[in-house]
Length: 252
Image (cartoon, rainbow, N blue to C red; front, side, top):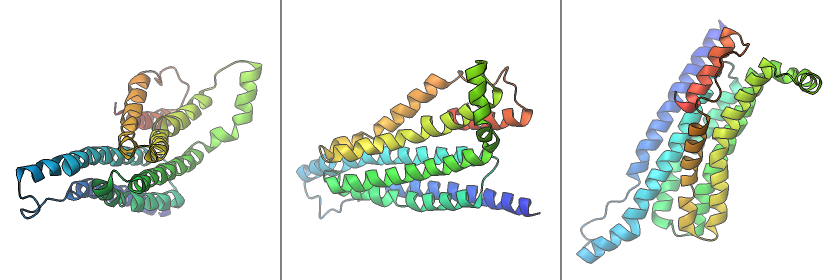
């Protein structure tokens, strides 16, 4: 009974999480400020508006939209895990609260993209959200792969003594590597780069987030088809679980 209630709670968390991302993505476009006729009184003023505000804002909008979309993909992976605790759900809500700040940070960048402080605020926000996701996934992996962590000494000895590759190590490597290092570290790296560039060139600081798109795209294209579960001695439930995680990451 308690298990069913918790499963329903998890489903509701997944639903509200999707809702938060849908609203955050929609609000991003509302951050554009439409000029009044009084503000734009000539063709020269309109050209200045396009160059100084609209063009940079559109670029920032698409970058911010992709960052939010990338975080949403993390939640798709999150809710594919079998064992999700109350603590993870609480961290997820804290992450959602932070995601709701992205439209504000984006609007702040629209007006002050050429200022270091505005870029630092945006980059630090992305970094905080990225680190929260890493914490969530560390807890998820520990909850779902606890048996494999418990056997780490046995795995290590088997490799040293016999040089064999154990199925449970394969499952452990897939769980950690694919969900944490490949996907989650991309926005962490780019936000750190952005923070450093903010002191050199605010414009480059914003553009550096395009590296997230490049990193994730290259990772997915490079890894597709290279981690087949064929001939791996896992139970049907384990294969289904790992396959769901892989599909969440690669969209296969």
